[in-house]
Image 1: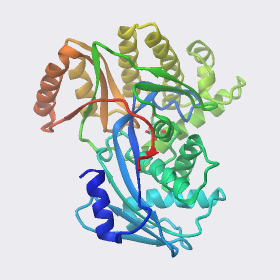
Image 2: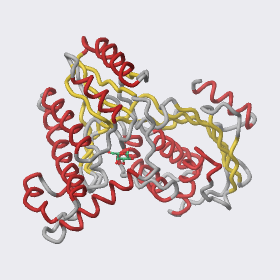
Image 3: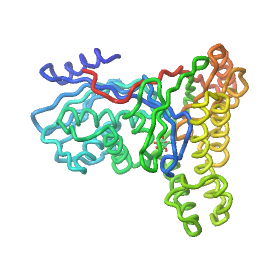
Length: 390
Ligand code: GLA
């Protein structure tokens, strides 16, 4: 499948006609700064060249039609504009529907429906933001089809997050939608989630590649563990606020955290907060190291991030730890860590050019031997954010 075939599929299903438009929204990988985005900290993601393609056209009636070429069956989900409720049977279509609902909630009501067909090449549940990609894609489509020109890309990211939080039930932060919306070729985004200020940092790695390894262990954030981590951080924050004047964990550095941490009564919550504080500091240091061309330091910080996510934040799993341990053993690996929400999904590694083949062989074989699962590898290209393509 590609965009041309998707367009053909669109006209097969909905009929030919005028003003059929094409769109694309990328997936993302986060280089460092994990579980900091809902703690007022920094993140450092980049948009990928894989993502979600969309074809869409306005309708004359009030029907919304959703079709996905990723499913075997030619099923079209139909919803009326007058009945924008979440329904389990809508399955994946609850993501674009949630965005229509969120637009309406913010005062951007649609006067007519639309037909939409999508196809994506981000592996689902891999932690590379297939849902944020679909949300921001829908936002770009709605803004374009209905002329909501006053909405910025940041607004579309916020609307995507709002719909995921309030329609789809995952209390995610802003990182994924922001990276999908604001991505820039060959750059990572150094985003301060406390005020959404950001700067682009060029990722020029002449001697190395970014390699994503998919554990094929599905991660589902809607099943509660992600929201549980958020609650643990909120609890730790409210106890810290009894002794120090802060609005978020991101306002503390490691030294200040050491000073105040004993007020957090629950040991597990204390560990979660320790991670959030230290990970934010690591992210700031990692971006500084990158600016200094100190890629070895960047790699060490990635490794430390993994240890902290594994031991303190407890969002890794056996298979991911195996992948990271195997990666650390390969000569030429600068750094390797879990990426994304966790509980499965992918790792991200920086690997010297001449070690990439050995990396894939050794990690792939070792992983297969220990788990029986065949890992998948993607050598990353950093792409632009969501957009209309024709
Ligand atoms: C998921 C969420 C993000 C972020 C990451 C962890 O991807 O959607 O908001 O919290 O997990 O860094």
